[in-house]
Image 1 (cartoon, rainbow, N blue to C red):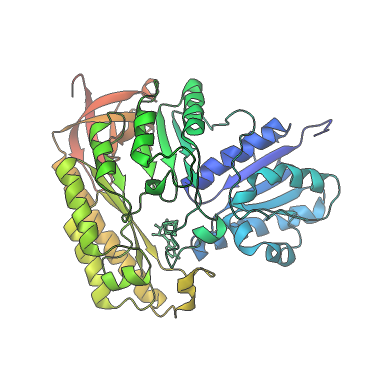
Image 2: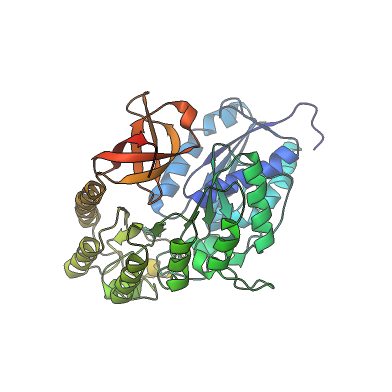
Length: 444
Ligand code: 5AD
Ligand code: SF4
């Protein structure tokens, strides 16, 4: 870029951890090309929204943010706006037509075209539709950019081949592409050098990692390799698909010292009829068996899940089956979502026949059930000693710090900011539905 004054960029990220990492990759590209970070939207020459399409609500939020910039654009045509990420891939040209003040549209697989798109609009081109790639190209551009702290996300694969019937991801992020092991290991080493201690490996379905690579490798073997990296204290990963999570994964959680005893395993529904309509590829019984096996191998494992309520044709008895499943499994935490049709995902062809009111009631009922379970599970930990990675000052008191135990439950204890990034031993002295309370001790 031939800029006498460096252009300032502001990136606002919506959605999942994958998007957070994608925004870092966009920084890798743009900082390398001579752009600067703007401290706020107001001082930026260009605002880029890295967007999420997983539910309608997520898209509505982006559009709300986008429309707030229309007035500024009218006054200052040199100011540029881009929509990147999943909404870019989902709507493409339609966004440029519908929102004439928008300059750039690109999808998650076009991350490496953003620099060129910016150059075009800054040199006078009217609008740039950079939605081109179906799959994420594997590239390495410049040095790893990382937002800092002590925890880093690392993509091990992009895209998804599962086509769960409600899900937009395979359409906007494309088919599965695994990154070779060496590339991942080198990136983690670079992050550790910069100060990262906790590594979260990211993929839509980490258990199918390795397919299509020349050097065959499966996910547990990758975990083994990451476990050997000096300087890494903790390893987490997300997301696992129940149909692919198996004993070899559970063994890795049990045996590898840096892999935290925690698993996010989205159930989505406790009704076999719904699971079938969702194209999930497992039954509730198969799911229960996997949880039993995991708990027999790793008794203190922390479990979390995602649940969708109000999927088309979900009857009261299907919902009750989900309730029952949650009560039987007793997750430590659960994310509950109201079904949202996402065309061209297959379920968008089904009639969205569960009313908003019923979706809301079911959502609230599951939240209430989970709250009770989380409280009960947290109380079971009273008196136990947990290894906690200290994250930040507690929101409640400046004399307290907060962090996560290995099972991913958050824990608050007296301490100061000097502890951030360190692993401390905490004896649990109190519990609420959302957090454990404790005090630092010398030994576990
Ligand atoms: N409606 C509601 N929730 C959805 N999710 C994915 N697609 C939809 C949809 N169309 C939820 C799933 C997934 C989580 C990331 O978002 O539970 O696991
Ligand atoms: Fe979507 Fe299913 Fe792929 Fe997860 S596994 S990203 S829910 S299609």
